[in-house]
Image (cartoon, rainbow, N blue to C red; front, side, top):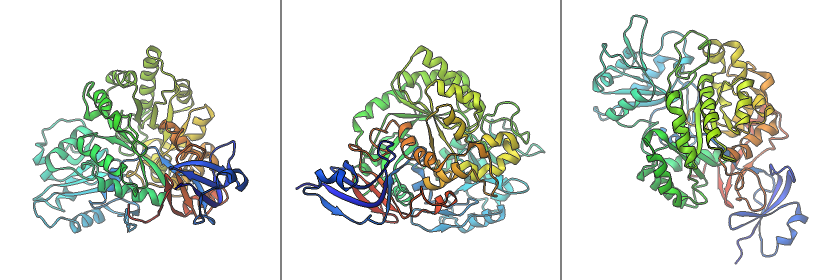
Length: 546
């Protein structure tokens, strides 16, 4: 018996410029067999089951989240203490906390019943609060007899109480990069960078951003993805441990989980060339819902956390320059190692100094080892000017831009990190496309909420949380932004032959929308309702448990 199915919709936007709009689609064996109007699909109707569930809906290619972390599915096992309201995988709204006093009260209320268990929370960002940053005294007011650790929204900074400092052996005499002190030289309890944060996690246990991946966590992430219309998502720092691989495989084999997964090996888990060997060992495990071969390098930290590396004149408020997570002297060797092994590199560069150092290293590596269509991608890449984008284009690099940053931190970048002029080029999508750089747009979930329609809105409107338009000349059109969260993102993942547009032979993956995002006022893009997703021809309603 044929599994051929005819889908009828009010309108189908294909993202295929040769045939951009359709009303009928036939899928078989999880792939698109025919698409167009009724006449175009007529030769394939014999034996087809007709599905009219979407007759009043708009279909788009399933959104592709090119920079996310499946830790979002696990993070909700811990208290959320962020500034903005946030939707959990179960659909509940968690209210944002607007003062440090509210954060402290929330931590007290969420303390585990086990008096010895640490109090761990996530999503905090002090840049939104007027006055002093959170200190040891604030978290000692939560508890002094057990560890308290609060991971910032970026994942690059953590606040801890005195009990944590005692556990990890840090005293006032310590001299360590990333250990923050106040004007009087006293330790504040704020820790920056992976070395110190890693030390905390090794002593008190994994938190929301570091807990070992499991199948239930991926399923929770998939529920969020379905609500957002996302059918393919990255796990852009993966440890590729046996447990994680088992979780990916378990979910990939479950047809009821509506998500294709693209994890990237985190370089810092694999010293020397052990990462290359690990990729080779796992290559045979790839399949339709699990794509392997990417590697994630992290060069610097976050701009709003003052751990990113900025070119002269540095931070607008005079803060010290950020941290090198990979020293420039080591970066070239790492790029060369994975590039020559055939890996697909995705490289975190937030500040423009980090982006420039990465581009310079890439220039030298590619001169020695040319490789057609490598599609190495700079992730975030928030501050390049036109000259740097021209170099990026010349090397054939892609950029996945963090357009959500405009809304969530744009005002803070104007006032504190970049200043009013440089902040205009934050996530400069128009400049990038003008010079021919292939781009995607992303959320970096759980750093900001998963939601490609909102992400597209950020690139189109470039409006901050206060309503300021930041970089009007860098705006994308709605069509360009929607392409960036579908086919553009698929291109950066080297999966555009399978996903990102609705064409014959590609996977039958699409987002089911209530309204046409090409016809609504651009201001209303985030309000376009998502009914659910179709992955490989199987429908999952938004809100359905994965």
